[in-house]
Image (cartoon, rainbow, N blue to C red; front, side, top):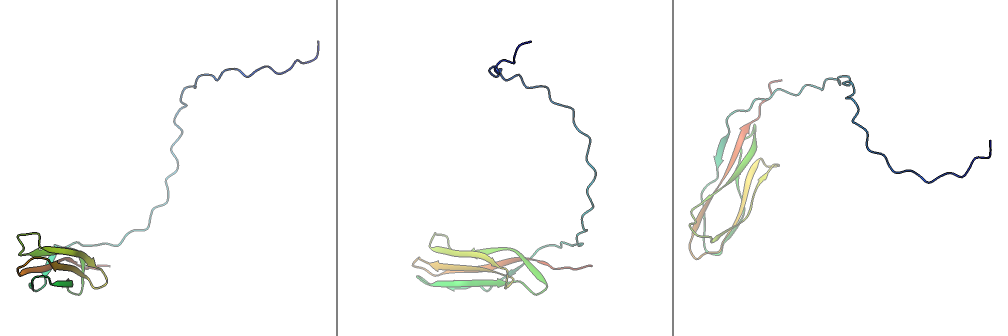
Length: 127
């Protein structure tokens, strides 16, 4: 037998083979820590006083505050404006104060009114 010859060129890539069978199911993981029981009651609403805003007047942080023992879940405002003269520059929850805050500027020539509302739920702890 003679000496081994040089390596030949690589052949073409073959076709992909069939998908193999599905492997066995893994073992079940450990159970998670149970969560606290909670109770969700009906939501309630608290309203601020109705505020009159004269022409070109700005009010910052008009507030509707939720009672103690509750948590704010939403809010907003109601206005008498039938035009686009009231510019709402802020409408947002204040989690620290458990309230809803609105800031507004009256760009119109007439007096307008605004009232802020907050939606809340009672906090329960039955544990």
